[in-house]
Amino acid sequence: DQQVKQNSPSLSVQEGRISILNCDYTNSMFDYFLWYKKYPAEGPTFLISISSIKDKNEDGRFTVFLNKSAKHLSLHIVPSQPGDSAVYFCAARDDKIIFGKGTRLHILP
Amino acid sequence: NAGVTQTPKFQVLKTGQSMTLQCAQDMNHNSMYWYRQDPGMGLRLIYYSASEGTTDKGEVPNGYNVSRLNKREFSLRLESAAPSQTSVYFCASSEGGWVSPLHFGNGTRLTVT
Image (cartoon, rainbow over all chains, first blue to last red; front, side, top):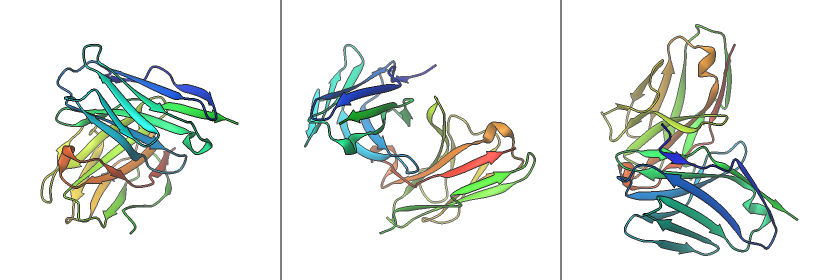
């Protein structure tokens, strides 16, 4: 059973607008959540994380929001830039790190 | 600083052949991991090594073995390759187990025919 779900396989956003990537989880024991970004032919790179005791973490253009009651987190990218086109993986930790299936983000010129 | 280096980058095997995927990190990290990525499946953990001298199974360990050769190196072996093992394999390391972000290599693309 999938514990970390990214229900949108792909998302297209105009350059300069806000990109919102969503992630749902089922395991209430997860205590830490992460987002990774992946370009083709490269490994994933760590982007931003949030502890389960917080509801928001911001790093430059990237903000992650956590809604524990809904078991939902989202990554906001503002403003979106061409270099943000990539696959984004949501991940969560209990005794291991579990990854979602990823969302491919296309930034349109 | 190279980070996490994986060799080879590409490999084609016939069913039943064996091979070892190599991984080395130069960040003095304690923990190392092997994941596989399949279309529509995300990243799935095969094996990990929390520290030198220890290894543990992940979600999909069947058909694989690992060796933590020293602190720097963590290899993944396929003893008898099967078409179901066609995938992209990523090695990763972290400073201290699951509490630190993972740093990934660029992957090995393996095709088993």
